[in-house]
Image (cartoon, rainbow over all chains, first blue to last red; front, side, top):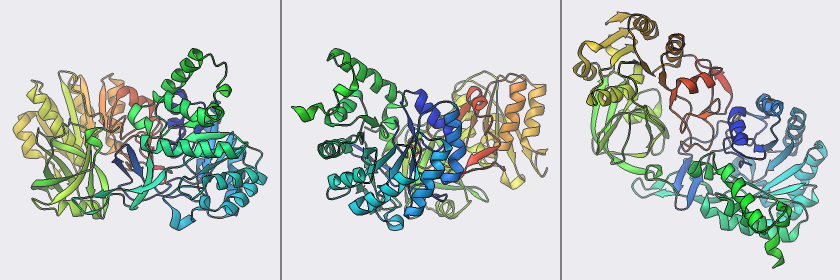
Length: 286
Length: 268
């Protein structure tokens, strides 16, 4: 899958992601109202990756329904990422998106760039459980909960999501950071802080997947620094059942999806695995 | 991980030229290699970072030509020599030089990337015809620079008829395509102008390269804010060839995404 926030602004772009080899596509995180996001600079290159603070630009749940329908008419599996600032928002969005025909919902509890407006829901286990349960009650679709690594104990939050009825955990979002320009002597991003993505994030994301896998029984979707099939195998070994790819589309192009699929298939053949299921979590058994 | 061009760096303004009342060219020192049709992300610390197509390039000095449309572009136009701005890029595919009898049609600030292209063509022995469209006589960007380069192959049109041919550039471009056998059309300017000329070029089966504009945020091809059809203007473009333009015919000249990703009408 593509990671949420990457190319998810329109149906034609997401179709291109699917045709490039993704098993499903993930929409841009959709909120109850349209949002323009933060002013530029919204993205900056740093060592080992990028920082971004887009500020959740999106046309709003209702405006995006036609895009979802367009994708569904072509038989493309769609995961709708969404966020809200109240339980009511979340419930309504979950209902609207489910009716539009999405295959699964991914709750974005964890965007690091909009804290002031929404509070960082993902840092509070009780909130995560409460909101997840409410959404669980509002839809028949599978519910994924996307968690942030910017918390003291991601395991506690993952347990809360499972308790609230989540069908899967996406681990995780970007890691909060910042970049400073020495010539202008000021932060580069308009939002000052942003989320770190790319290869530098991978060890953190792997650790999150590993720890969560030891604590919950529901599947985990690995996200953070996946650039190659090797990275994908690492995430599977740590306990992920699937991976999401974002920043690597910048460095490797759309081909990254096919490369990961082919590399993974070769790895499985070479090591005589019959199914990806045999690889999931294998590193925990050593 | 990233290329040299991806890095944000501070560059020093070497020259500021007021071209016409509301367009200013900023020359700055930068050694990254650039092609006509590519763009820089220009950062005015404290205000915004905006995409600007490159209006001239050599090994050590590049320029962008800025029309004042808001706070950030006003700040850019007021910069002085030795002041600094932040730059990323060059980004985007740029024009590719094809054909031996090309027609370049530029409207308003759209003339900026095409003048660099015309200079590159002339340096390789191609003699392009250039139709420069503007609102009125005091709005014709790079009239002297193009006149010196192309002589009578520069044709100017103004919407109000105050200089050169009278009326929209799209109309004159269509007429010129009737009477001449151009083998390639290059377009940059108002989208409605480009869409009209593209329609005529399609009927005559003449290949087109058009430089498109959308709301660019990340410029790395990741965020999708600049999407038109299956393409990202920041990375797959900004230059679209005829095949790409055909794939986006439901949007080109008709609708575009606003900052939140809602579809709005293209009105100029």
